[in-house]
Length: 558
Image (cartoon, rainbow, N blue to C red):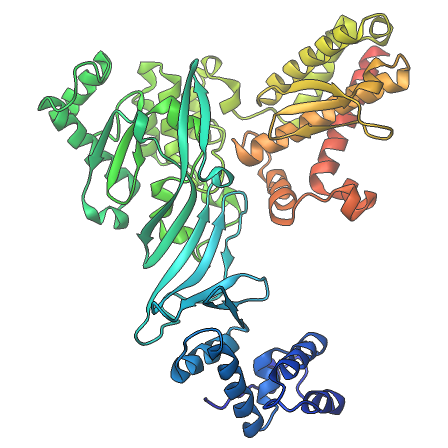
């Protein structure tokens, strides 16, 4: 075993206290290794030093005895050569990893309880986790182990990386989506593929094979080329196959057939109207109906093939820096389809140019050049895809809408039934959603108990309000109901921006919501207390917004 050294600059505590040394040496490591190791772990926790630092402060005989005993204990559970143990131990000390045996596997585990290295000493195989990406987090998780850093002679060791997409929780199940009145059953699977010298496991990948109208193989070097070239190559092959009669009659619409003939005659295009090329592996493209492809959120092949998505030094957390203005050639790429008056194709093309994997797409008119192109047709585009008004405008429009709703007036409200009140609240929510450029929520009533006004459920897209307040005729309860509806609707707006499409005009506020909701997590009253709960960005924003709306509404009534 190599002699361990550590510089005083790297020690949080350069020398253990005499009591700590005596406490460790009270135990004979050769006769009671378990107690010795337990005490060493206690000292690590109490003294804020790691195992390598502690061992460096012992004499060479003590260290060698400790290593010998640990090796013997491990050999009782797994088959292990002494030379391999030495390499494993050196690596574990350098990276502050604990050595554990779990069901015959020798694992190296970090402070986060993550298995960084897993070895099968019988099969002579192993895996090294380099990092993980989670769709709803702006930062990747890194184990601080480099590709190729850990190897053992005679072992087949793979570096791995885990990617958890939007539907990772559904892996192994079927996701049912409804598109244009038709239900589709999409298997959500785990995929394993080689990217960037690693075995990348992707959880939550949709399998569109059942609904793909065509599957095209492309050149194997796709992984080192940009996604646009994959699509152009595949679409050219698709067109050639069509000309050669390799597709059943009726596979394509007349408009699609016309487009395929033009491509076969030399026109360059990434796809044809109504179909989206979907990466199914490194060198295979499936042509999936565009509406279906859009309905199942996922991290596509272009994300997986882009090495910068995996490693430090390439991440940029300010999406405003990433989404620079589109070039003149890109604007021309958009303008050439404007005469088609196909909103879906237009949205797909703009999203393609603004693609930022791991983040939801931006409002399609967020780029100044694109906004000018869309001026004449903006009224034909669903507001869900367009930038929302500034908060001041939303507040004014919502309060004006409220003042125009006759049955929302308190004197009228007192006279209408519970069911009618629910209808009025749903109508108000629909109007607020339209103003905010987000999907409308279903408004529900439920007994929530004293002190609980309501909540927004992202999973069901419902706003739930305490039924006791809705049924009450008191003016205070009436005020609380309206403020709760607006407050929870603002949470729906925040979630739409964080997970579906960034339509909010102020990127800095979205970044604050993302940090609160995704990076640090939502701070509830039960676990963090009321003060922290109300001060977190998403709650402070929703509270201020609903208060401003209600004040403006009351001013209009006065």
